[in-house]
Length: 227
Image 1: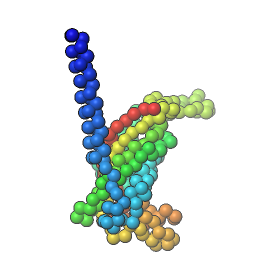
Image 2: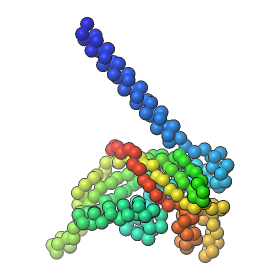
Image 3: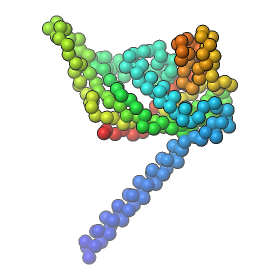
Image 4: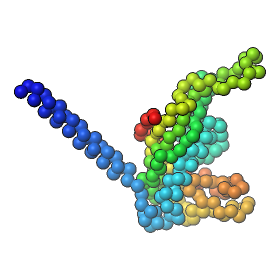
């Protein structure tokens, strides 16, 4: 009789846990519900949710690349002060430890526009992004005289070159509202969409100020896993 009661209690606990897990998934799905193309059309957007989501993944990919290359001018244009300073601090800390983080083979698992609102003269977007990539840390200590003549691979001191990392983020981006989503480059005449770019995609000339393209103002990591 005792074992029957224990078994019943265990079964009841399992059922309760499953119900709570399903509730949490449902709650998250509702919280991260994707914006519809109809809504974008109603607020005057010339792009679809799919086009916007792909563009934001490319933007995030460019940011990570710029961090590795220490392209501060690009980062200053595309990041808010708070996010820019956080990346700057991370780079500084890595240098003090004679280390550098390498991110390779980044690919999108999904990218979804979950919110796009117009408040006063500002547009605020949230994108739920999940990416996979390889991330590892290399030793940047200067080689001694004997090692300079030898061709060596950088020594990995953290992470893995082969293990695939998966991360989910909620990215928040803002920009000043504009009547037109595209601009004609005064230098070459090519039309560039303002979803993520402030320079001409053909000739690279600056075509719009920082206020009129999307700027990353917050990045919230929601999940991490290894494969």
